[in-house]
Picture 1: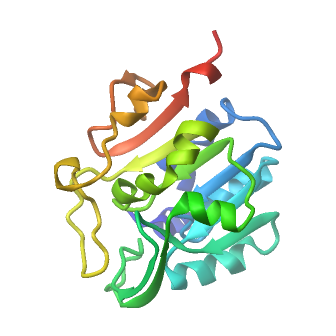
Picture 2: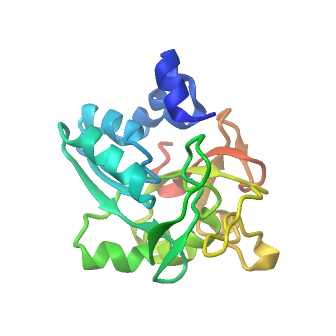
Length: 218
């Protein structure tokens, strides 16, 4: 399911996480888009070509180097950081989305609300969050964005992903201290699965769109 394979086969935009027709009905050119879990830049580049103001975030240094090269021709701000519920630097293997055997790298974890403020990054209109299970910890550090900024979200939900390494916890269930995704409903977001059906919460593996109720056209 590696993105590189889709690129080589010429069907990248058939992936549920690259369904831009759906996204472009929700935002307009000039919107600020966060591409969190940028990998090699395929999502962020497409958003930039559609006239969005893109800030992209990638935690794995090797992928960051590829993304930096790919994103150079476009108006994309790229940041080397991984999201967590605490700020720390660790050397660990990482779910890097490639087909290679995992290798240990120095990973810089940040609390995202703090990182955005420290780097004076514009607040988002749209957030794509696809970080291979770490969304279960990263969202603890995104309280301000969730509650006050209230963008539209596209979240890759990696329910039950069992990849974890020392220093990289992967998917953490709510009962084990992970984020409670029913929070979106409690905060007044409508949640939709990748078939466009409204659902009560993020439960099964897949792509979800979460839209603040005040941004839904009547």
